Length: 97
Image (cartoon, rainbow, N blue to C red; front, side, top):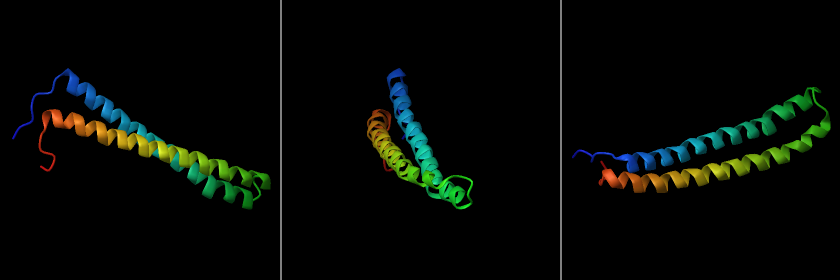
């Protein structure tokens, strides 16, 4: 079974869905960077006396920012799944193949 021909509307919807996927990936990368900074790099630099001790207090905001970005990534991923299901159904009616 071949898929139907894609028209401008379908390509536009595919583009929107892929935008959600790329934004989700970007949010995961940003959140992972904040986790790495707050959980590994800052404590290491403080213990080696390259940074003052009060910088340790900045770990909590870094964790909060990473939690927000992980939440945003989940939201964008859910939007991708919802949007791609609708657009794929326009030209491919069997999801299990």
